[in-house]
Image (cartoon, rainbow, N blue to C red; front, side, top):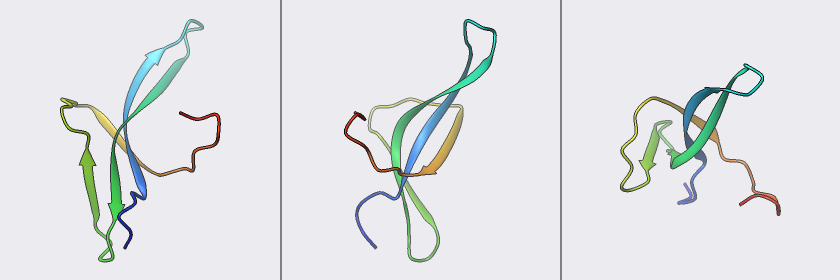
Length: 67
């Protein structure tokens, strides 16, 4: 197993845009790794006090335009 995270932990927050459409905004708050046993180990960034709906998604490769 690699030490490189395989997944991102995202905080999902719903909002209504100017057109009245319900949308979701996702904020990356941590990382997750799939272990050889099939379990998932998660780490949320230090100092965050968060609650709500979380989504764990496979990490995507960043392109040049991403920050």
